[in-house]
Length: 76
Image (cartoon, rainbow, N blue to C red; front, side):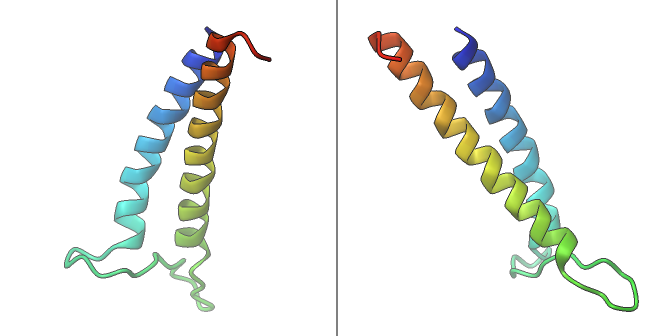
């Protein structure tokens, strides 16, 4: 039961991260361009971190789904 709840929470966080990444990684025309910091150095770290966090949340969602299936089958 807890794996299902955690999986649903991770899926919702992944959806919210996708909304954030779609604004930070794509231009209004649809081209891929990572968000920049706006400082004098102007690195792409803010956009790259947002993409990385969304990928991690997606992996967590899959992990909780696998755990829920295994618990439903009776394996631990």
